[in-house]
Length: 137
Image 1 (cartoon, helix red, strand yellow):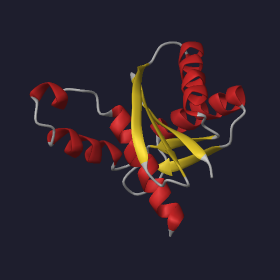
Image 2: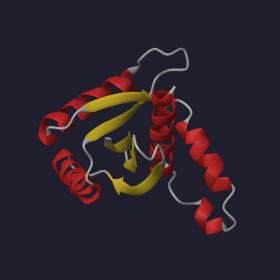
Image 3: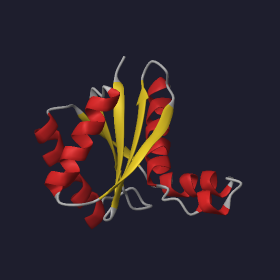
């Protein structure tokens, strides 16, 4: 059983989610506001320790045709630095529809305030849930 910390890496925020192979259920953890890489990596390291993560799953922002554009290359570069820093296994997973799914989930919230929350952690959970579901097949 592997406990995963999933990351939805954006330019301003990083969504975090946690889940495991055993439970096959992902849940949003929190949203980090981006700072320096050092600040980001420290905050992610704390989250890894907090949830007992054994591996990282990073959402890869592919183009709709499945190719990698400039944003995917930036995410890969960032994630590889993070992997070296934390020494954890790293996998990538297609994140193309994760923000759409997160927006749909937030739209179902009853309060207007809840709808204005950043969707990044929910998007990270959608990425992780897709990965866990696909891995089960």
